Length: 111
Image 1: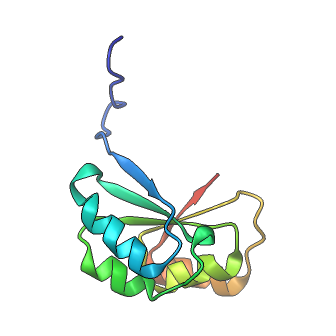
Image 2: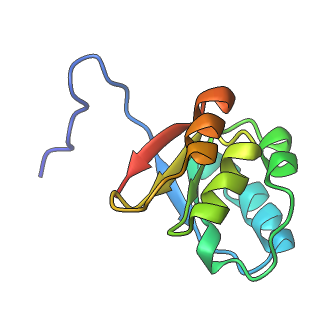
């Protein structure tokens, strides 16, 4: 079977989804799998202990996608300047979140 090719003008990116239960485990996983992906999708809802996501983004040179079903957690991800936040397309957004996304230049991904 032939390998799928990127669409014209698009480069191929490897995304690895992480579902750590703790902040410390997230750091360990990011270090362990650093060379295995171009972007990391972090399931923020799965984490029982929520650390400072800004520290994580600043420590690693690869973009992070914060994946959540919660508006509060999406706000935390935007405040931490994560480049991407993935939320359900039907998640109600308020003005505070819209402003955060704009000011922090966070790109929203909808699932």
